[in-house]
Length: 103
Image (tube, rainbow, N blue to C red):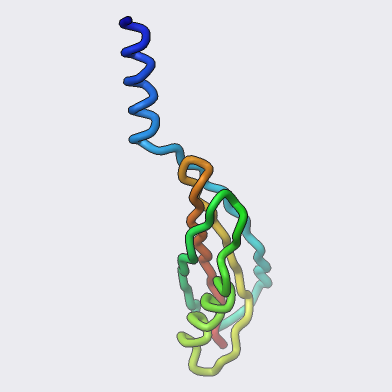
């Protein structure tokens, strides 16, 4: 009976603490000698279910946020990083971080 109690206690702790996995990828290009002001944004997208759907318009929202910080409208050296946070491998949270140089 003690083994069953420990099994249920372990399962309860596992479920209550959550199982989190973070995946990320980045695309970047860093040419030397780019002058200007650095602009940053971090956008969180919709929740995903079972990796069956992707966030809609997350890149467009990040692009608009970067452009909103640049009066000239001319961005260079744009770098992005997409992170996916899994909760129990069922629910995903997508976050896009972007930086650029405003010239």
